Image (cartoon, rainbow, N blue to C red; front, side, top):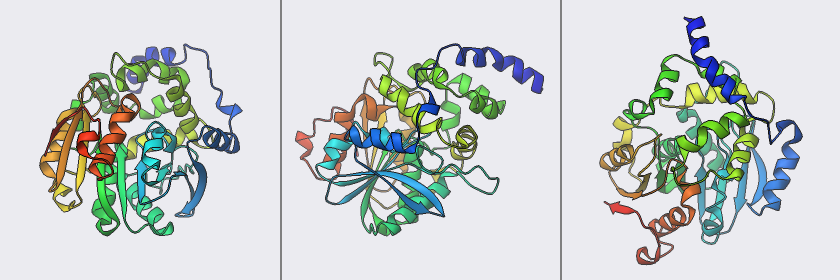
Length: 331
């Protein structure tokens, strides 16, 4: 069986290594990346200790707190396209979840990357920063974590925004066939071992972005910096993938989430199809649904102005009529 798995995946691995590297992770360290973040005007790069681990976050703006939670293999800088407008209205905290970006990446058998564990770390972050009432925004896996944070600490979460959010039980069956096959054959260790910039370039564009939208070079660099630098990087990719994706679903727990919630989907999302967003909307007690056309899973990169305006309108920072959001809305 192992031989069959290897023979099946060899063409994939060769194609993943079939390009030259443009970004060499060896050339980057924490200080260099922090400097790039601050030089680019994304925000102030800082660390905080959570569970005896260093969690990195990017901070900008003033006012009421809003916490941004990225998805699988992303980091706090994932939100760079929408943080400028959010920072005009909020004190923004964009986290690097443990196992991602510049945060620590423990790989011990007793350490958990479950979304429940990550949500608990978000709550701990709020406690340490004395944040008593915040808007929580999450994308993809981060959307599931945001929902679990709101369930775990309802007194600390004033509103939630779930963007292309994972967490619904039917989601694994709706994934593209090659991903379903890879998961069924437990190929995660092999794929993590060969995870590289060429792999990102070859497989991310058609999977994560709408067909007519180019994948930004900046996005490729960010994924490299977030996942291929630091000790234990590829082992952490494996653990995050196995432990953090498509487990411990929220269908039966949505009724517990009393927080008012905006659910946003992208019509052309291949990873979390709009049906998953509509299911969230039907199960959550107090939610509004918004769907954007001509965008894929990386909606905050593809339509950042629309996403930021939708968040601001939902939070009452701009009038709905002036939000500029062009999605299909339903209560």
